[in-house]
Length: 80
Image (cartoon, rainbow, N blue to C red; front, side):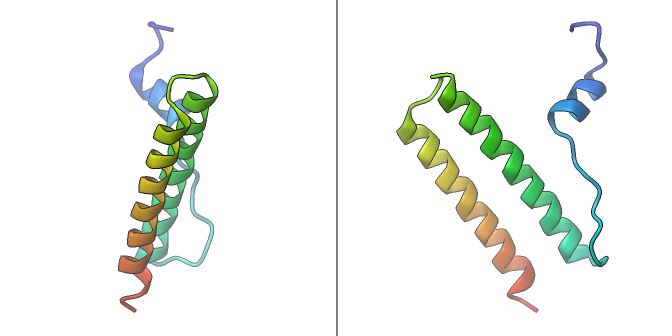
């Protein structure tokens, strides 16, 4: 796996799907943030499942991510 280029690894681990909704900058930004949220939730769940972090740590990290996503939503959509 050391011979694989870094960009290939990054694209595999942090894949971003293209946006297919109505095109506005706000919606595209929120979609990107939502995909990042989903990826981080998956990583946290895997760390918890493998015993690398405690349930309390996992909950704390998930709560923090959720609040960050809520703030992004409020910033983008509630200002309109």
